[in-house]
Length: 148
Image (tube, rainbow, N blue to C red; front, side):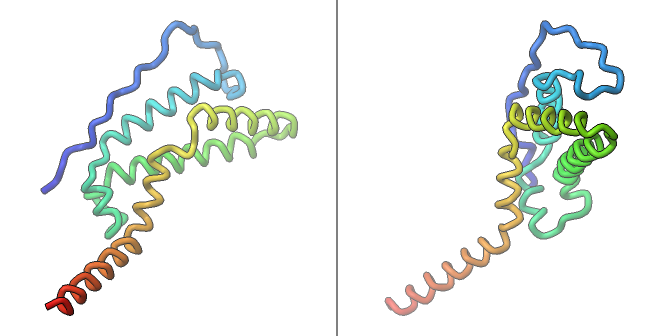
């Protein structure tokens, strides 16, 4: 019994600013615009994830049943790689510091860690919580048996 994607309203992008010509210079990109575009892109990926995928991921981390969740995670990994390479590829130390500051501001605007990342942590810990739940059920059955 597969359920459809979780319904979330699509955020609307801001309008009115004219983009700067920033050919290859990440520091010329507006922090707010960059954060907004990354958030909108991740939102489209996030809304494709179903509840069933999250539950299936606890058992198997590969394959078609968890494709949307894996795509979201790959995007997150690519973004992390982009941040690292953009800083490490700069030869000038002052520019590295500026890039770190720039990405930090983007992260603050996006309010990382995202709610999904906090939820993903609980999904990865799910097998432990399931065992706790089963232990509680066994205790409850034992108590019911003793009450008879």
